[in-house]
Image (cartoon, rainbow, N blue to C red; front, side, top):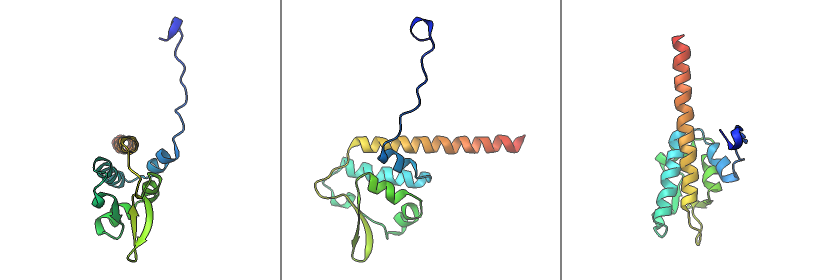
Length: 131
């Protein structure tokens, strides 16, 4: 019960920011987990060059990020720059720019929401199969 016995108002959820919308557009849990790992490493160790550069030609990265719709766009929205180096595409954190824990939290929230949605979808499919 709210103040004076009134039921509290249900407000619509706030509109997601451009970054949140880009990360939420990725529907592959594996891709969101990899985005989380890459941005977390870059946030925790900002001076380490190996965490500030991701080769999209790498087989593991290509299979997870390159094949997932919107994954590279989400990385660009998070602050990475898509460049060409030695004839292959590379995601790079521009010099002078650093990732923040706020960006990590955005990816974590999207990962948790996607995981919950996938579990709910499986649960609903199992219930409908049993009926």
